[in-house]
Amino acid sequence: MRIAVVGPGGVGGYFGGRLAQAGEDVWFLARGPHLAAMRDHGLRIESPKGNAHVTSVKATVDPMEIGPVDVVLFTVKVYDVETAIPLVRKLIGPTTLVVPFQNGVESVARLTAEFGQTHVAGGTAHITALVAEPGLIRHTALDRLIFGMPDGSMPSALETLRDAGVRAGFDAVLSDQIEVEIWAKFTRLTVFSGMTSICRSSIGPIRDDVELRAMMADAWRESIAVAGAKGVPLPATMFDQMQSTIDALPPTARSSMLEDLERGRRLELPWLSGAMVRIAEELGVAVPTHRLFVKLLRLHVHGRPTA
Image 1 (cartoon, helix red, strand yellow):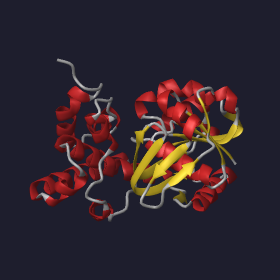
Image 2 (image 1 turned 180 degrees about the vertical axis):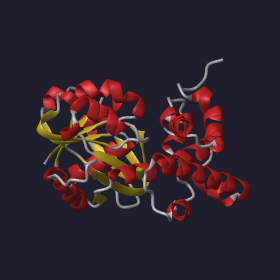
Image 3 (image 1 turned 180 degrees about the horizontal axis):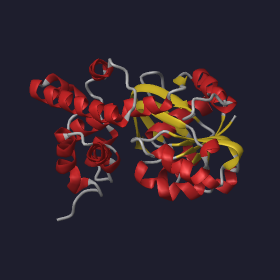
Image 4 (image 1 turned 120 degrees about the vertical axis):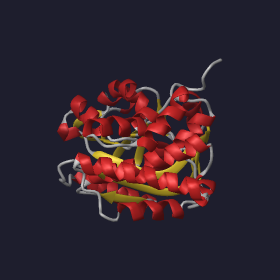
């Protein structure tokens, strides 16, 4: 199948690179030094699951060079959605599916408003990876993609994508309850991102500290309460699953928001704990821990503050 990766950062670069390595027809829509490095030297992946080097990479800044594809892996940062939408429009043919693998819970609705229900699936990525330098993706933990149609249908394009992911060696799951999957990640990620960012720490020291562990648990309970008030049927074991997921992470695991914070980049905070607070206000749910995350990080939302 023909696949376009819009936003080949940690998520798009890793999964797109694995798919290309496995022989799929993958195009990367990129820009700047990352694009130049991929064109000149290929795309490298460093990973505990095995390193890879895709020596011949199809990468461009111009979507017209790619043309219509079967599937678009939409993996730009949430704050770049509006800029990326006009580029995606040029990749869509009669049966193209756009699958957003982004943080937050608002991407499917935004893309559906732009492209229509028949062209938009839902997706969520479970991975810790980043662009270590132009042309190099450093992967440290997890490599699961979950995707599906909001109405629970199973189009052949998504079945083909699932099979391609399995051949590429990562965990590809086609779900008939994608909204639940997206919210399940949202409830976890808001806490992981908020805690690691306000503490300026990887997850190991946080989960080993009794008071910080308790604070993290409070934030989990808040997230679950918001999802329940929203009518999202998360599993009854969600809290226990969150603890197990955190405990299974390597102690060096860090959120992408912490990486952005330390590099002075924009933060996705408004679409993570910021969105949790907005939704909670609409539903009348108290989320004091998420409010604290927002307050402590607000000066950094647009990048490193200037004196």
